[in-house]
Length: 248
Picture: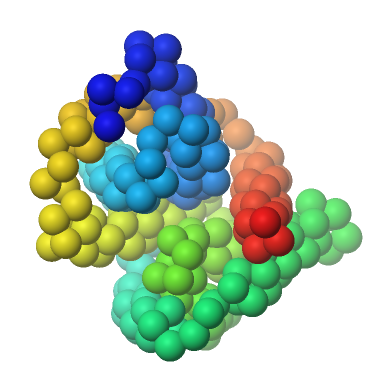
């Protein structure tokens, strides 16, 4: 893999990952949305998900080590068991049927929700703790099906957590646990025995670290309203990408 990459290729990959991890540092998700289309031009598609899973897990560990005390552990205790159950459902669906229509449904839901949030027609909804059940199950299911569950958790947490720093680190912790599961699966499957993949991940770590540091800095400078609007924009882009993926 690496023999085909030139210095300019490495610089492009480092640059796009820096931008992607600025978003991750702010929102706690979104790296695949930003990075995957560009990375696919330089790296085999089969390598991208394991590479991003490894980097996302490392980014989450760094963020939690910095700000873990701000996480809403009560929300994590509600969501994590449901995320696991949802992941099992997702795996079963993946084995039994073609889940393409679910991709379209998820994309359409996220797009409409983001437009609603950005419209300013009504205040952002406040969810009850019971809402953790559908959001936790759906987040786990779509993570297993498409590797795309982060924005489902973001919708729930934005309606539960007032403080933006607590939202960010709670979201990051959830994504870290989700990606840890994928990293373990990839490791057991022998994916990380590919030395070139590990070396590329190591080369790209500085871009990831700079990105999450900048994301954290920008978050501290934002008001809650600015932060939630940015989350809605990221959700809109995520949902649009899923709809586009379905039709292409």
